[in-house]
Length: 232
Ligand code: MLT
Image (cartoon, rainbow, N blue to C red):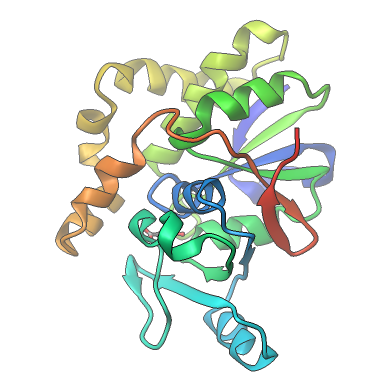
């Protein structure tokens, strides 16, 4: 089966989990790993991230809350902070409002990978080769539904629905949403609450950037505590 979910309702160990946070955590993670970051260590809390400062290794520390960079950290969650010149060869410790929280809750899955519009095709091609149930974990906003993650889940369903997966009701709903928005995803998602939030912070260029399809091919996968590039 193939199902988009708010995580507490599903038995995570039964699935390959795709964590989705389009604005902006999983987009930035995909971009950073594509751009040669050695690893990204997702942590749920700001304090955990800060604690890496004491570990004596040359980590970059990234922390975002409510769309803003947390004071005292190297950067936050903007994809523009994850360019080659900034992240190649580096290990980044990252905490975000929702995305790293969803990752934390997904740790017991058979495998945890990262999905974004950037790596849509590469991700779906890989998922097609896996003989496993797939759970599309939409990070949402503070435990609530959001439109952009669900629409992306629908885009994944679109690419996998002819592959013999049984689609449950959330998968069908997400795919219907995708049909509504697919001709102009930017326009459709302009009504999202997080889009509004980012616009108020003056970072609407991040929204546009995160909606580029198939910009990258890397699939970040969780190995222990580190997200690294999946070796196919
Ligand atoms: C999150 O994890 O909640 C986000 O990616 C928020 C953001 O930085 O836009």
